[in-house]
Amino acid sequence: MNPVWIDKTDVAERQIIEAVRLFFENRDPVVIHTIICSAHQILVDVGQDCGVSSAIKNPEGLSREQFREHIRAVNSPYNFFKHADKDPKGKLNIAPIHRFSSDFILDAILMFQGIAGSLPLEAKVFWAWFVDTYPEDFEDCSKDGALEALKEFGLADWDFPKIHQFLMFGSLVGEIHD
Image (cartoon, rainbow, N blue to C red):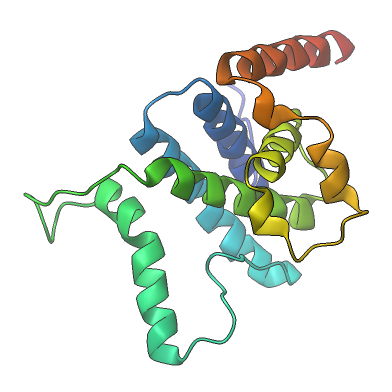
């Protein structure tokens, strides 16, 4: 068998693509969060060498102790999904995980773009959906820039099966052109 080499950025890209597809398929939120947090951590690590940082894991204006507590909090679900050594009978409320995963997906997409300089279709579609779905998160941004253009697609009005179908069509078209 011939070796097939991939680098860390390739891994993160594959994980982002799958997390977005699973997200729009309304699949298991635990699996989605685990996958996107793995991609996110790779991008945090790789980004340190390129000057690209995470908005989620690098909030401004926190004291050292507040920063540590913040990191513990944002990593808590991911660590819960990966480990059982400290709390084998632990429980976690996953009701808010859908939005939390959305934030991680977008942050990973932004870091990936900063590192790789390009985005796969899934990332572009998710970004457009996120900006249109959560406009309040972008109130401080320019009203005439790329974010406004993303809102014009109106993806917040599309149901997830329609977005999934669009992604599948995009993949098919991409395979035809390859």
